[in-house]
Length: 333
Image 1 (tube, rainbow, N blue to C red):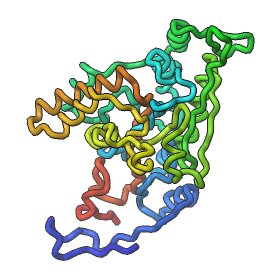
Image 2 (image 1 turned 90 degrees about the vertical axis):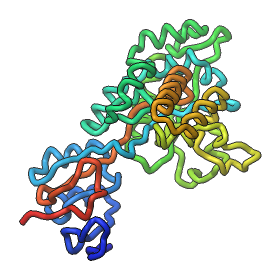
Image 3 (image 1 turned 45 degrees about the vertical axis):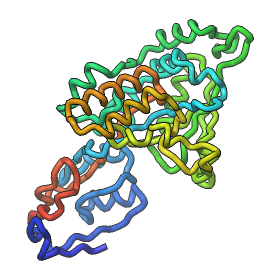
């Protein structure tokens, strides 16, 4: 795709006469092109976190930019309508499950210098929201011992096979799903599963094949948890409202509230945020949303996803917030 400079562009004629976009689906081919100097930058997310870091470390002629402007979050969404097993909606269980995950190590291993642990519904890098997060976000640090103790308080003990069982001897097992085609989520799926298994949870990982990814009823009625990439912060406030719950009566065509979590208090806070003009009042509503989500855990937030751009040093005026100032780009030499 060739883009040519518009002489009548409202912010002034772009400095570059022409920009050529190449659509390269294979990440290894993209890497080879970058290192060979055949392309000047990447857009999109076909390069995995570790690969992007490897390129940045090897590429003396380029640098890596990390942008949180359109950040999303990857979370394990808990099924709140007819879950199997029912215990997955128990708040003590959800808190234990989150304490069992070493999210910082997962970030360091899979998205080094490109992400952070998602302790809050607010995307990182917002100075105005730091106080809101500090006052309202409940953090669940990695603590397997505490996770085990919490599970014991709701009646689970280790059986002879080291898996957790209830008083009737029923094993505490469930399925964690994600769709195929997202390298980061698939790696997270098996990492999270392994850590839950270490504390005695009989978790089965399952990668949904592409053929079933668009089956709306199948996707909405997952049995226990699904690992999904979703918007957060002000963009996510619309999606998690109960009106966006996929149900038989809307033929599962409504989407957004993937946890199918219906709570009148949360709906009221979301409506208040979305209809309030006063900035202080909006921030106060957002703080209460942050607290509600971190206290009640309709989904278990794992990490933030960012936009990562690998940019040649010869490209001038590329800004950290992404490629939205293309008219200012220039090239050296």
